[in-house]
Image (cartoon, rainbow, N blue to C red; front, side, top):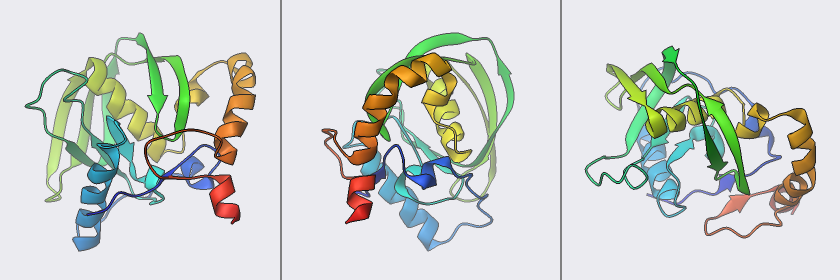
Length: 185
């Protein structure tokens, strides 16, 4: 198990659509373990495989602390697909790939999602509130969509300077990252 570097804003892998997982193998199990090991010390509550440079439809969600429920275990959703969404609510969101920026984002309040588990069995869950938001945020990543894509063009323009700093690696984070500055070396 390893802590993987997280790709930050400006890295092309964040804008690519991830491919469906066709089977579970040792490499995928290792990826899931590494993603959990990466997300938890970074204080994240969700992580998509794109964020660690892997274009496979895998997300990890761990909302135990945010939901103040220590019994919640990290969830692994493989090939997640939203089959129903209802309601709307707005809440501030952030992202490990876009550190130091938080914005108010509107998302569905309640969702139903189908996915495969680590045994490649079909699963379905209904989620609402924060759990639904995290799942939607991470599925967006799998489709190459960032949370800042949900804000107005005017607001995006106001963030351009801060986003350029992130792109260049001019951020302070407690986890390893891959930025334009790192890749240029």
